[in-house]
Image 1 (tube, helix red, strand yellow):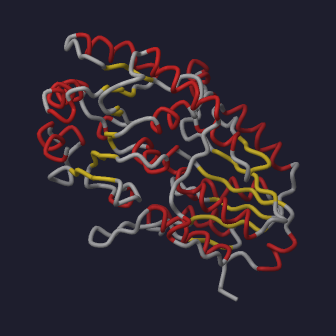
Image 2 (image 1 turned 90 degrees about the vertical axis):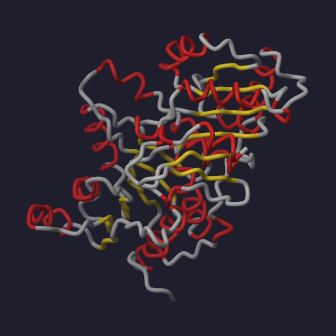
Length: 366
């Protein structure tokens, strides 16, 4: 049997497990495969998931947006989890969730948190005082020696991944390696490809939206452009998007194309003001403001996706639509996994933001 951090007898005796993670949509796009493989390898164990909100705040004006994080829609539809802790966005709800989790008496808790792992080591042990608890452990220096007490509370540890610039592991391989270290599981490369099961109601909704926009039936291709990411470093200017559409529209192969520009719900009004100046033909703004599945449903209808480095470029692979990804050099482990269906344009210098990628570079790629 392979060497593994969680003893086989612990796995055999455990009827449930709690995974703790701080998840973004991109993270879950690849971690989902590991959870699926775990449920197949250990069908007797019920999986529970703690999604920790790193933006937790006492500011009640932010709670509504945090509560409606689109990832929760995806998790609710995921068949692998019997329970998901998603109310951790306020200090009070965080404490309530800890109490609820303690009452579960988890025999096995695994923290996959890579940010501030010492805090999650404490959280995992707090939730399960007598269970088998494992999690990430960072390398300690003189200024972080005080964190060693938190790590000593763990029964086993794994190291957060480090990226090699010369030969970076893809993030899906990193996640698969975590599960190999923890449980002795082998997740083959073909089992790491992202997937998303889109409910029929959202596929139908996407088609109705395209019809209402006058995009169906259409003569040209349908292009989805996503310039938004959580940080400014990964965003592409809206003016670049407008000028790219104008440049594409004069090319014969894109002359009749229709364009969808993705925007966060709170960005729609300001984005509309920018694009009104350009009077773009066959162009509509889109936002998945009702449910997560609005996004992959719309993506699946497209012929091409152009996106900055965010979940959209990974979901493009999941729905098997060609994607042009605009990326910095900083995180090569996060390139789209489907090399055959993806073209990656990176910035010239490591310190450059995504906005340094020019319209001409995208046009040459097209």
